[in-house]
Length: 499
Ligand code: FES
Image (tube, rainbow, N blue to C red; front, top):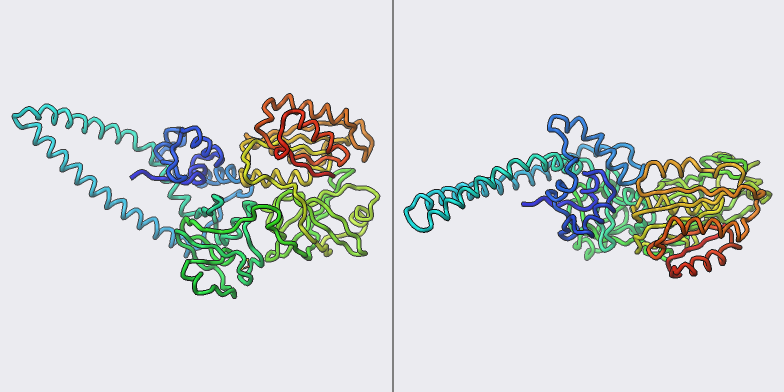
């Protein structure tokens, strides 16, 4: 029986992003069977994935770490080992599959042997059909040898797949089609949030019931007791809490995911200052930490209100990805505002900052997988960084090009992060555009901005097939919108926020 793999699993095994596997399916290089691909076809497409038998176990851990790292951005530097009970369950499951495969193999071998004997018997008879049976026997022998010669190519990939299935269970969510892996002892909710997906949840603690999901197939295990009580009807339909269970085997579940910013509730959280970094002469980076069980739910690109002591309040875009667990980052311009003054002179690590929100519509179009162009002017990078990290984490776009228009005399303040993305990721390009002849806080003129956009047009001849996200000064928004419409873009392809 052909071994079928999900797109995520296939991507992890051969070490490419999931989008590449999906592209092979679209182009017909891989045939999809209800979203899964054949291992034998994968081997033909990636013949170099073969590893010599005696090397495989020495290299497999490194391989998987690299594959996961590439497939899911840089979050998974090393594979986290599951606990003993989960390992035992996964091994028991694989052993059952192995036993079933061995029985099926034995039955097929018997059938083949009987067929072979029958063909020989018929070919030895003295009648008109003997020649046909003789040629059939020869074909059977030749084809059998060919199959034996080609089989070793599949073997290393089967071993990798089995190893991955022991180390990490895969979650497939319907109807969204979201896929991710659960490692170590993580709950299904935690692992999902780490990918940056907007799963529905509330307390993270088994009380509110908002993370309920329906188990369609596979095996889960409770990792913490919960107070939420399911009605009998839901119990009978295999409903469970994602925050209180882990996946023992690959699972398919039905669960809600925020479709838009309207699905994200308003929240008020008390956070602590984790770090204040004066990252350049003009910008400071503030990192806040929420309680582990009370994280902020938001979509990448949204903003929140920050309230300091002395009643100092400001609204800032979040610069981090929802996948950043309990950390929220902000980029603050050093200027004469009360917030900037308090940040640079009074605020210290461990202080409380109240956060209210989120708000804003500058979020990724979840239904689009088009290449994305991001444009930021100076600290417009904050919401763009959140979107880029989220898009990379979710593999939401096949290609990303980020243009950072910098009006300061020095390099863009997080230039090195963008360079690192550019160097590490095949599908990411970074272009810094310096217009440093402006004075501090001066907004680029329409002429300067127009020259920047003209460069962009030269890089991307086919703008009909891209989404554009711009975080630019408000005074340039209308100009930019008119510019893009004149290039023939549709309004829904262009998204703006201003800084
Ligand atoms: S998030 Fe509240 S019960 Fe799971």
